Length: 103
Image (cartoon, rainbow, N blue to C red; front, side):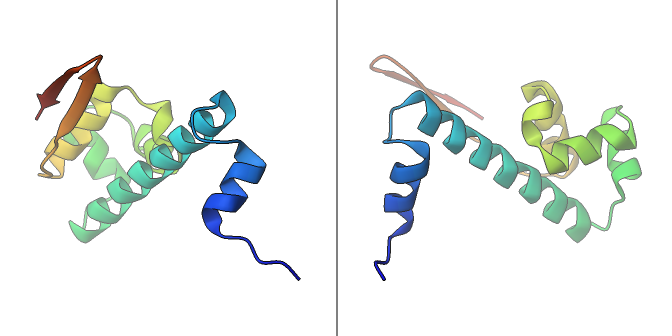
């Protein structure tokens, strides 16, 4: 039985890097990881979803949606969540040949 590496499986089922299908897969994967980071950090800080929601001005259900699928939230809301969790945030945006660092 042939064994495949994870990159080989991703190429096979989601397309090569740079294809639209692969880009969508990688985006969704990053959003899932972001949601999990938010949930883990919230739990480490011993906050309920309701308490975190109160800190940033949204309902408990919105926090649940973010934790389960971070692409359901705006960047502004995600930034508010990380600020409430006292997390350091760094963004790098590359436009053509210019890199912009947002913190």
